[in-house]
Image 1 (cartoon, rainbow, N blue to C red):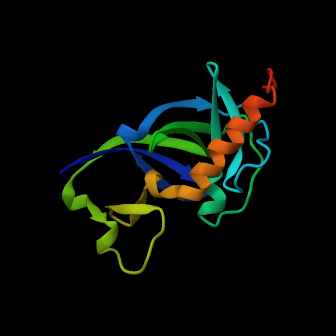
Image 2 (cartoon, helix red, strand yellow):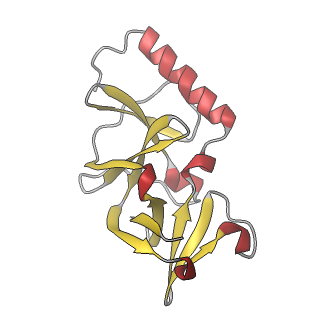
Length: 159
């Protein structure tokens, strides 16, 4: 079965998401702190009146932190009923890959957390990110509680 993926860059590594998870890509914007949220959350952004948590995927993959710049982008994506924003350095392309080009996670040597597979393109590898496993159930609950508290405490405009 072929997969259509959206590729993106974090530092020097190319990652991808299944296109069916992606809602849209937007320019980076000001991130408002979300008190009492799990460490995986950088903060929140307002997208057309909806408050969306921004996840720290750089930290999750062991990459050094970096300040948000005007050239950065957010991938707005859906995971287990939650819309999230992923801060990425740049967007690659949307491409369709065949079964022969994709090695599924369970066939990879070792353990790769948050990776559901790899696309092999000659010497290049694109790591397919498993957005559904990115957040633990405790983190999902923590985000929902922090968002509820934020809304209850009169978040006003703030963004």
